[in-house]
Image (cartoon, rainbow, N blue to C red; front, side):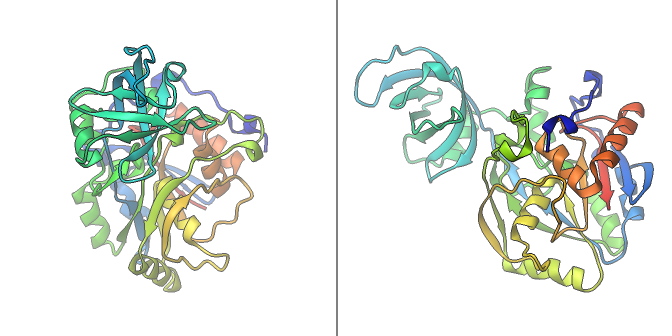
Length: 351
């Protein structure tokens, strides 16, 4: 499909720079079939049914943005030390190796070392076609521990370009389910959930389960191709264990609905589901790209935030609800002053 079909105009003042407080006071646009309703996240239990199951991503965001200076090459040769290098880690490739998008990449060559301060250094290698490098971190301390010394929370560019990251983001940009370190972007639909809301859902007979998908920085990359068929997705690592897969299948067999909280949960469930709708255990990389025409196998609904124009995520929600339906819904959200993107409001999509 032509990528221009997924474009829309968003006033910059609609981009949220801070989350709602309390979290479940965020607004909720409910699309159920042809019906459109304005509500709040706190009212979510009234829009679901006893026996439904919400599926959350329990990944935890790591401080994956680094600033450093280029140092000596690993062969001892000089490569003009001192150039400032920015790195955003986006996918683990080994115990001490991370794939990273590089700012000022023209000043970095394979074999260069980068000093990120706080006694943290890495060696650059294996430059890819997308301009990213592999970074091999020196020493034997866990890389996650090194990042707590030298890294920053990786706020999305549409927030980071408008204000600096601060101490509040360390909590604001983690969900209440965050337990498995490895993401470089938050599964932001789950940011709206609180213990009180979870208790209200459970009291209404609505359960929840968790899976893990380590969200990569590729989620923010724009679709530069003119046609969706030419776009290449970055792979992300995920896991659904056997007990969780069995539970999701049992819910659907009993007539309940599996509702993904966030596009990350949805993409992993769909990666694990076979053509007959059975969800299987899954562990590994997924680069699933969902566009209109896709037949959903494992999910029956979605809670998600409002996404960027021309993004793979707006294509995904258009696949679930229909492109015309989502264009109209986003026009409604803009007209009614909903807040957009990672720290913004939410929608409940029930086709």
